[in-house]
Length: 260
Ligand code: CAA
Image (cartoon, rainbow, N blue to C red):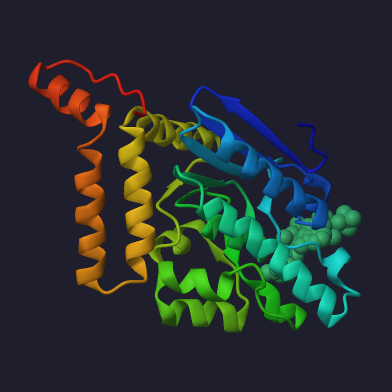
């Protein structure tokens, strides 16, 4: 499928989604949201993909937010619809049956920070800057920032960042548990691909179950979450990959998983 505002490349088990509007610092307009949703739906349906990397084109930005030029004259109804369209993309990313990794190479502001927050893992370059500057525009985050940031940083930091609209650098973002690792610019994508490769080499059904159980358990009490885990653990013993994984261990050889 041809896209105007994004690029989707699949190399083996790893798909890479690049927001590609560098002249506007990869700001998300309606077209970009529409194409992101189409691309995420496409990789969801594509067999063999086991990890999705999300990044931004150019050296300056991951994504500098929702497109301010597009939003500037929105009515309340239009803004509500735009917010919902953004939420749909973030929900589709979270619903992928395999892990997603944000490789944040520059500004990840507003909708860009929210795009990273919808990914499972976030790695950043030393040049990355994060923030939810919406209040500087007299609005609030609209693609999930008021909800997802606190789940990573804790409530107090999230409130501080949302209320002040201040940007933080990559090392602060790591300190706040938003970012896992900070890499030199030229090492960021390689590092993300290495992590993706490791994940892709593991039992794919197990990785999918792990993602599901972690996500669903987050909103449950501990006992209910643990029961979810037991059910998933048990169900994996009905797979061929479990037999292969444990047999390979006992035979001291590498496992060959088939996703069955
Ligand atoms: N929307 C539209 N265009 C944007 C943009 C955005 N979010 N961010 C940057 N651009 C455009 C600029 O208008 C500029 O275009 P022109 O060359 O045509 O003038 C181009 O990208 C380069 O940007 P700057 O000249 O501003 O670059 P800079 O290096 O001086 O500053 C920046 C970089 C600090 C990231 C600055 O561009 C900036 O503050 N951008 C806006 C960040 C922001 O407020 N994001 C939140 C948007 S609201 C939102 O996202 C709501 C939501 O949750 C749904």
